[in-house]
Amino acid sequence: LHCFSESDGVQVSFSLQYFYFLAVSMQVFLIILWLTRTIASISRATYYWQLKEYRWDRMRDFLLQQHGHQLMLTPFHLLLVFNLLLFFCFRLFSGAEAFFFDIFPLLIGTVLLAESLHFLHCLSLRRWKRPRLTMKALLIMGLTLLLELILLVFLGFHEFQDDLWFVALVLGLFALLDQDLHALVVLVINGLSRIVKQRIYRRAREKRLGFPELKVVGITGSFGKTSVKEFL
Image (cartoon, rainbow, N blue to C red; front, top):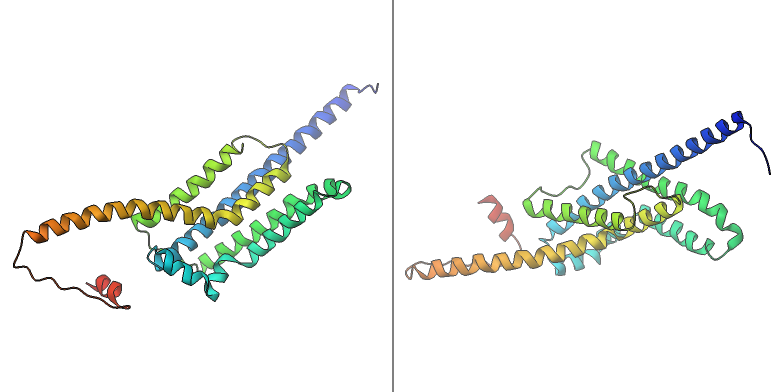
């Protein structure tokens, strides 16, 4: 048995407190970076959905184009995929596993930091594509962010995690899947809004039937309807 003096015990206790503080700080820093880039990603995705009037057919055609590829496959997404693939590859080799677990949070943190700085830079130059803050857009963004936070709490992120690599792994996966969660929220909101619209259409139809002499004009075409509506 190795005996510690009182001064040795104080040093060990101080070292443990220092490393605990460092681990907690790193975990909080990763979560802040993830939250910043997630807000940016959700707002940009909402902008494009709003531009396509929340229609799945138009969004599908957009995603098949070059601009759609840039939305789904940014350099930051590719870096996250590369780091996550490295993580799962190193899991297969027990000798290098411990070493990679130490640097994995730094790799994920670097990607999240770069994406957050890119967002803040574009925001300062007013180049970030932001949606019009309508009630529907705010509801979609808020519910998407709330859904991701609930999932994080479900995974135990409401308390300190001993394994920093686990924090980096979950945040990296969430950063890749936020577009899918956002699309899921859009699907749910579209279903609810369709029910509300049907009620409004039914009331409008009943009101119009009360005026048999009323002339109804229908405007059709592929372009210009929404723009003219906004002008009016």
